[in-house]
Length: 521
Image (cartoon, rainbow, N blue to C red; front, side, top):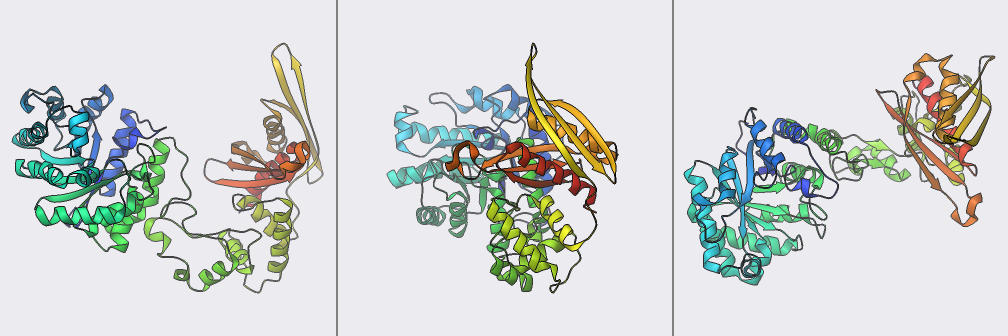
């Protein structure tokens, strides 16, 4: 990286992020994420705690053999134990043996922890901090000192909190990060305390926040306004409890709103890709409502909003979504206006004008279907078919003349069987298939029948299936909405079906899924 950053980005996804519930990375996972973060342009990548588990030791062993262009790898640990010099401390030895250019250690700021958790004296805690920093610096390491519970400790005893940070600064720490470890501090307190520390110390100040009260990113930005220039966080906000400062929100806020250089400008267009990549490696479903990078971050639904965006995009968008690798989406529902239909149809590939006569009938039909329980926001395949049928006289590529689903029990257990009769231009296919359940059997039978005429459908797979009961007050007679997501390995699309019969609703969505694949060009 050629330009010196105004704000350093320190990523702790591989360590603090992995402490989040449901997050677990293999060594290979961690290496792949580290390479992606390095290519993106973060300055520090915290790889883990070599004193805590063999996996992290193995990660550092393999990371040593890789060349990172932009980022420095950091090992994480604690100050030495009480009563033991740093050069004799086993955990400090493991930090050095990780052979990382950066070592990050945490120490106690809050006297509550010094006395009740460490069970030591305030003076010994200061010695533990200074001794450990000096030891690491003597071995040529860049040292980041994380002041654990910085804000709780400062509010409890300001003088002692400052003494801990001065001990790290005087021992040679390169960065002192103020940590809101419990995540419960307000932004006004973060700003006031950070400003106080900035006025009394010369070392680079960092900020490490958690999101327990929903202020993880806001608190980090408040600290930057008050003099910090180093931000610690995780991709997608992974972390203990409710998570850490989300770097996919913090980075664009720093770069685009605060106008301070942090990562290369070209990297911002890769932000959504980075977010989705880490979710995929972590086997997490992407949060569509994430600011900046979520699929709904630039989605417009209300008719008046869409009409305004159609005329002047920034009237309802704070930035061009492409700047962070995202894209504008127009949603269609019973709240839609003509502008929604017009922009959505264009997005789906239809060529039409604002005065196309079919727009009015399409809008009326959508609102009618939504009233019946259909939902098209996640079913763009079904929506495209609806628009196509309104604008074209071409017949559907196939029709389902009939179907039957049954269940029987034999010595092997329950068996579901489905029969489907399909007609294609006068030719008839009649197939039977078994499945793990009625929908699985129906899907298999439909696919088998259609594949005789359309071999390309052999690649189509059902990858998600959701059922929603629309009027539960009617009990087992309730109307059911089925949403299906299909894929051919290159593209994914959603379709919808609604009926008081769950099998019928499922068949509607399955048929739309196949028909959309055949007609989407």
